[in-house]
Image (cartoon, rainbow, N blue to C red; front, top):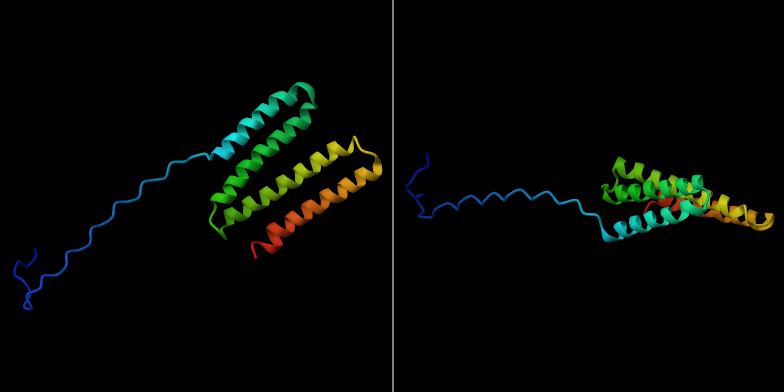
Length: 139
């Protein structure tokens, strides 16, 4: 029980500060950019399956979906965490495989010297992506 008499100096002690209510859990929201990208990806899939190589279209679509998912996980992970490192690796691998897949598909239509130049540019793109994501790492 508390003592109802005031202290000898005549001042009453300050009441305890109120305990803040716990913050509500944030609702999971999909940004409009992601939603628009997924809708355009689905529309592109419908158009491409009718006229193109279905295996390549399936590869590209699945790869892009996984890339969007991994990029979202990368953005959501705290800096320096193992989850962010895994998501970073997945994003790099998916972009490297997309680059290789599109270069392979494009080089089938090009003359040999131009195709060789395209492969050199694709390798440079993947190498610079590796440098920026893993070596430089936000410095």
